[in-house]
Length: 162
Image (cartoon, rainbow, N blue to C red; front, top):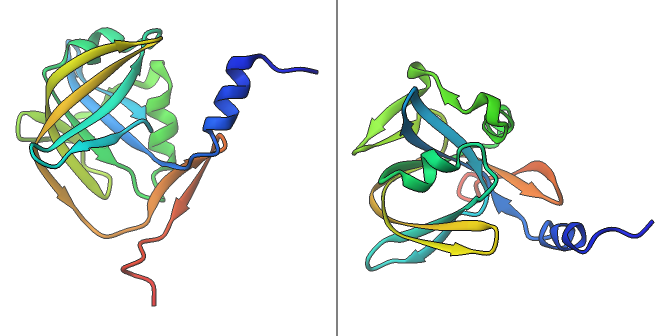
């Protein structure tokens, strides 16, 4: 059975291992979260990063128009959070799960956090590229959650290996 070209492309891109994050922003009914593995550093001076939001996302309106948003890099043992925020019906972040980091909400979970303000939005194919200026960040040690060939895994912190 031959697969569609889009599915073949997705499988090929799946050979590129990525980290897993949750982007959070204020929404009309509280904080909304979405699982993202398209996070990329763009520039050091100024500090810029980008992520991509699918046009068909149930959370498109929230994130496409958010001016301030936070990124939480998930740790190896936070696969359940990645799965939860990948589904539209579980986008809500409970108040006890989040905190304000600058003007942006972030998850209390994670191993790194970025408070961002949207600098630019660009339409590209079936996604919106959101470029944010990093206003603040923090990091702690720990193994990272990864996504590779459609499955979650982990990568240990090389600073902790002996």
